[in-house]
Length: 438
Image 1 (tube, rainbow, N blue to C red):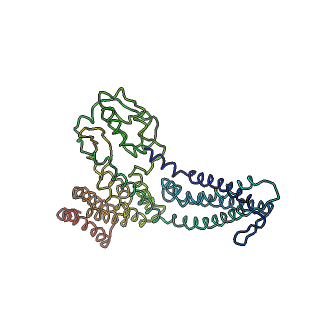
Image 2: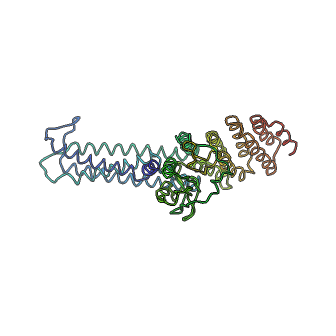
Image 3: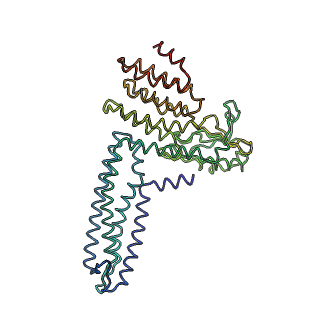
């Protein structure tokens, strides 16, 4: 939980500018102190010290220039955010804002302005000394700001390319999946069937203190507290779910439930106004899927962007095949401590392709991309998912055949990935029956 909280602080828009500004103020103090120690005969790379008047004019001009560049940069960023929101998805705004290169550029601008203004405030009005380190560093910072401005233009242009955007979200989601799979508490997982009495047993209910999305759940600390209090925690929500205030967040089962500190349990589940990708795998999948759905809307008509979204989600689904909704119990020394509600592979598969299949019924490219992706997934995941993948692919084919006015070449284009899917799932018989039926 603390790690997620610190990450939220690091990703916020003000964190890096605050760090840069503090560093800039300290640097301004240091350079002025160094200048106090210099003599009129001092020089650096052949540059002679400047008088107080010339230094003040130079630094004030640089401060005004950096502030102007900052204004232009913010205007460019607002244009990018408007494009993202209208063309791609409002949910991808935080990806650009939290992107480190963007934050470093803005922090460099704010730090440069902070350095120049701080230096002018610190220097005294004495005319008996000259300044060298202060103006040189101000010029170097201004040159760095110009280079950063050029870099930001290039960086923004790359981000406006939808393939790069989809790739970034995919990579971020893949890191989330790997982090979730590598958690030490996964060794404590065991299957708890739906007929287990712990799913229906009454207990002490802990209610949500606010409405919003469940962003993180500190499972390891919940297990530790359940062990210390000798009880079982049954989560009533999962990461990514929306919960209303006063609805059940979790239920404590056991004789010590009523005497436990309920607030300490509630603090281990973080609820926020918007979903985050730290633990919510589905959030990244939804962002990629929404870009694809918008691409095939009547106002855009870009099926190849939808196909790109589908191909990237296939990569994520292969990673997600190791998630199983059946292993929803966490045991400590064979003693059940926590029941979680985590979605499995089927949930993610439907979330990835269901809306694209529905809204892309009249687009042959989208349907072919889905069938291609299902075939790739079937070759790389466990055999237990073959029936699910084949059923989804067969339904996709039926929907395409019934919705599209296809020519013979388009039939063949659909049948080829369907045949590949049948081979990967050992469904040749069902494939032949499907072709004869339609």
